[in-house]
Length: 239
Picture 1: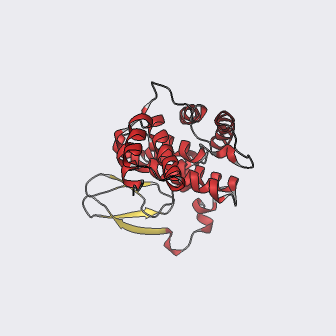
Picture 2 (picture 1 turned 120 degrees about the vertical axis):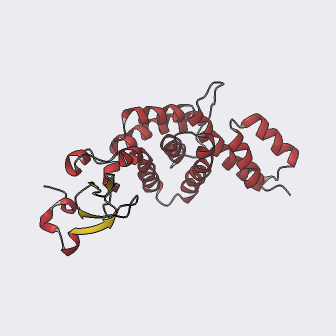
Picture 3 (picture 1 turned 120 degrees about the horizontal axis):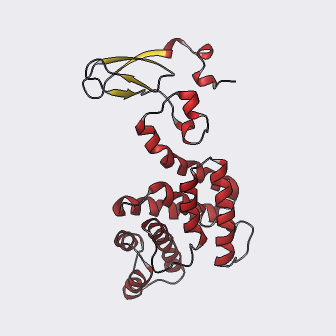
């Protein structure tokens, strides 16, 4: 069965439409199942502005169904994956709002660190969303146990979303020793770890307020990126 969204039997009156070329303004006619069309004015291949490419981030038949995907979409497929990982995490924890909140906050911090450091957003964000995936139903689990479970569940989740093997291995490598950083970690690990440390220090500061000196000591000792340190200073309120 063909995807109904791309099957002309289900099309309505707006299945064929015109859109302006973003470069020269020439009107381009699109069929709704076209991924791109060539502008007659400047020759640029223009992406269909009304096409929903969301399914292409995870569907193994995307290329066959939609034709040759534009380079811009292929470049963003990994980035789109992180949103589906976030959804899987929330479905896993369900009403465990504490752990959902932790993963979401760590991912939010990571999203701010990544562009400043030039890290890979798909790898870092997926690791951030999955770092505490093994905490459900566990009372004070050890870091080793959390890492072991995160690796197993991370592989399962990423496989279910048909993530590329290379990306999966890089995410799993972060999860494998997330709570035990080494001396020669790569940039993606450093960004994910710093995001977690901001969350951890925020929680610590709520329980026992940190002094400015104590915060600076943590920043010097526990953080791996300059962007992580700066973001921590902005998000940890010292009285």
